[in-house]
Amino acid sequence: MVFEKSVVVDAKGHLLGRLAAVVAKELLNGQRVVVVRTEGINISGSLFRNKLKYAAFRRKHTNTNPKRGPFHPRAPSKIFFRTVRGMIPHKTKRGMAALGRLKTFEGVPPPYDKIKRVVVPDALKAIRLKPGRKFCVLGELSSQVGWKYSEVVEKLETKRKTRSAAFYLRKKALDKIKVKAEAQSAAALSKVNPVLEQLGFKI
Image 1: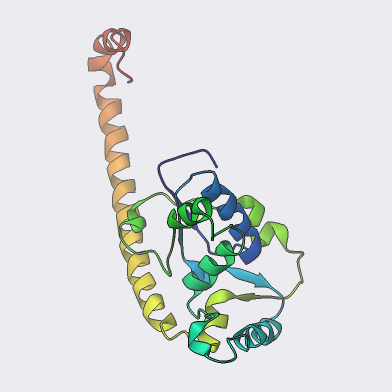
Image 2: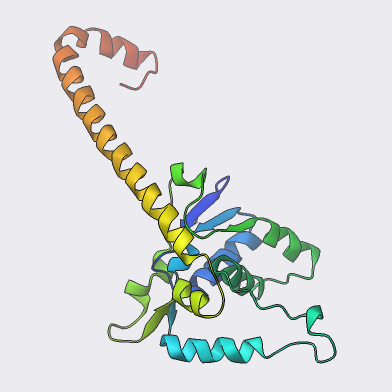
């Protein structure tokens, strides 16, 4: 990634570990990263196999007082955050600062719904996982191990997509009007445009 003020990554369709590795490296390099739609992340291996892995992870706790940890996140955003944390030296000052640059969300909450989102080609399931291999979706796994908000997120995402589609149609209509207006005024501005270009204006 090219260094920017903040990068918004659309996590849907990415493999969990590969995306986490790229994000961890960017965070350590000083880049701020926001990861949205974490419920759409894919994990290689069947759902049943990953449920067994999570069950084994959930059995690990402090023997005398389980309230002391380790803690087992259920939400997709928190699972992804913990995966990234495992790839960062999070007990050092540098690691703490890097983790402070990461934000993770289910769905696409404001203001990130109006910001350009990017993907990580090196982590896409369509590119990285061999066709025919089993995989599962993180949101589905989370729902089966105690995450209660999949329906709420789905409802909000449907609303967001409706708004987004309406905005896109309006934008297309305005672009068409703009092109038409430029074509009509091209003859009138043919003498003015070269002068403006010499002064440094982009036409």
